Image (cartoon, rainbow over all chains, first blue to last red; front, side, top):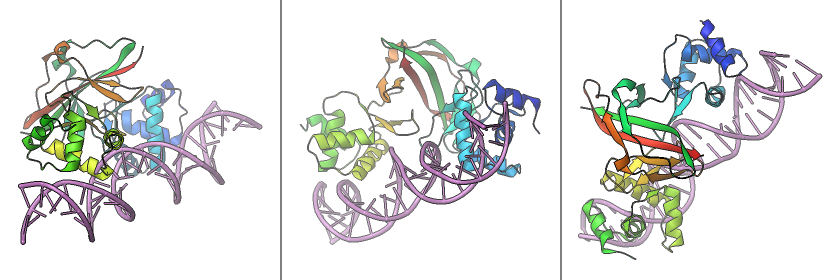
Length: 135
Length: 135
DNA sequence: GTATATGCAAACCGTTTGCATGGCT
DNA sequence: AGCCATGCAAACGGTTTGCATATAC
């Protein structure tokens, strides 16, 4: 359950390996796959796995993971927040009908030129969200 | 104040030209400039202009304008919604420190290739948000 | 022992909605 | 007349916070 990867991942962010954090981290990166989760989803997944974690802790933990540089928040829907375990800059598919976020193949996106940052500013990130609807 | 453009813009969306809508439309497109506003900002601007419009009406009106195809909602910040008077697909700068949204020069963005929509789906929109932080 | 994490419930804040009133065509 | 827009205040939903307890180091 608690794959070695999990505790390494946590300590990589300088975070204490508490029971709750280990459980959530296992659900997020335990199998080495990238995931895009909402707080609500992770809370449900933890409950389903028999782990007792409060919703507030899920929120606090997701925020801690982001601040520790272990995850990124992706904003695609005003109603809820999505958290992505993949850290490099890459495009996303947003499935409007199911409110789901997935990775888009980064190799298929080529940005030949990009507007320069205005004077005194620098680019912190470039979000590319490809919104999908039923054909 | 109520530039001719304003009522044309409204009727173009098949919307009745009420006092409140005319006032809000004038603040949005009265001078022919593109604008990126939050509901809160527009509410404040209306009040400052001496127009009496309730906050609920500002929300309802912005949503009506979007559904009528006169504006677009842009999601860049989970906390609030931004509404853009410019309708073509174009990139945005998001100023993280001031929570401000502006247009980025569309000519400077060249997307040479884009991931194809998955089977059974079609691309509804491609959002490109260039997040800026202080240099 | 000390600093930090957790849990609960209550607060929070932007947004939406129900319903009665008023305005447009 | 009839339909639609407006305003108010109350409801809403996701997220955050205060504080007491529990845990990691």
